[in-house]
Length: 142
Image 1 (cartoon, rainbow, N blue to C red):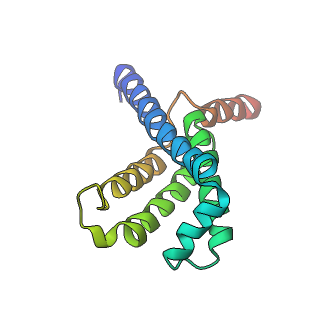
Image 2 (cartoon, rainbow, N blue to C red):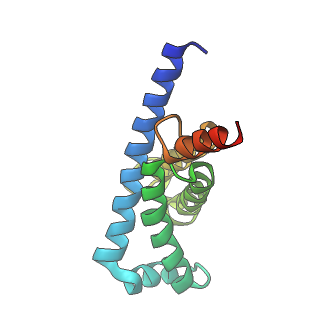
């Protein structure tokens, strides 16, 4: 891959991580600040999700912390898979019966989930905490 192509790829990954990371942070913040843990727990309980209180806390944490880590590009591959799992559950359990299209369908959750999987495959790119850690590790072993 040429230097120019790599530079473009890294900038593209940064923009994708920023966009998706902000969406996850905002949705996690919405659940925490607007609905609260109790409201999110109630929603998950209505859906028949087991252990709704624990799962509500994990969902809020995954979206808030995961979105923040995605923005920074820290632990990107693992965080992206956690976020993809949350979107798979949302697409199937919350939106599955609503068909494909919004406002009730699964298109948005599926899109976020697939983008998260793609980020897990590619990694964070050059402009990330992951890349800085890898570079530091390479210098330390050289």
